[in-house]
Image 1 (cartoon, rainbow, N blue to C red):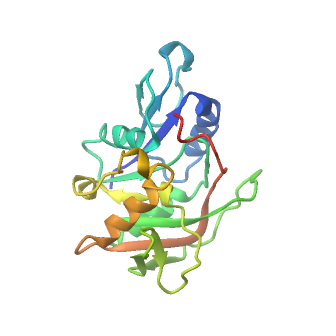
Image 2 (cartoon, rainbow, N blue to C red):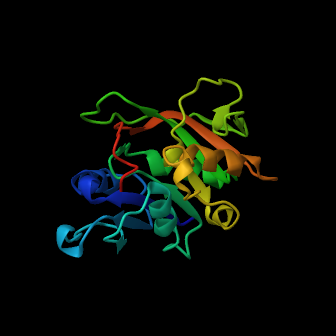
Length: 217
């Protein structure tokens, strides 16, 4: 199983991206590659990325792109990955995130979503086991994903993982009218596809730092 991480970014999140990369380096299961699409950024503004235990593919764009465009550009660099895991540049990754996601993928899941925390994390604590719920995700009337057995379960739509072939059928909608909700709409569309298996991981596998600057990228 080859898993790539696709990261949308823009110039104001570069310093936070470097912190995220440290949490990726600390993964108990390292990614096979990382692809970053960073907009509103000149090459001279971006630091050299060296010394990581995984290859990094970097796409820089001086012009404005929204988050959906950056997500689509990032994953398209991955032709040989079995699964793509999306993650925002300004959030932090729990060290067991990819390990637990791979467990779900190996059980046949086509899309994997997980819990998260909004509380500031100084240091992540490791979990003894993963609580993975299979085939209980569905598209809500609003278009996002919900867990049928617990409809108020926290779900981080922008940190979705899907098998690579899924992205041949559904991609993030780049229209301006979808900004700030393109991730939840994407997850709902994937869950609406026929013959799609899904998984939800109950453990908090990320620290989500709320941002109000993602549209103007």
